[in-house]
Length: 109
Image (cartoon, helix red, strand yellow):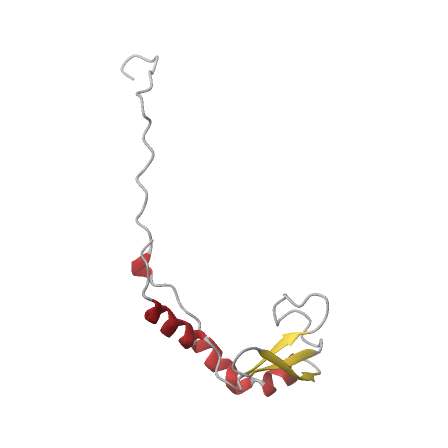
């Protein structure tokens, strides 16, 4: 694997990090890892980025209320998602070939 210079890595990292004051909403409850479309009426916790970590700042009654609170920041979050570079895909593997010839008992085979 090629080593990346530390300066380039730090620059890429800073581009992905949230801006101070940016907000997001997360589902509350036992199954916090589920998507936002699951249980849209469930309460959501509002979090704000303080420059180092996500800090809780409030609770919204449902998905629509939480989206209104964090609405302007969601487009900024979507812009920071790194998309794959298709030029960096690995090469296609060669087809499998047997290492020794197979004997076919049929004549001409």
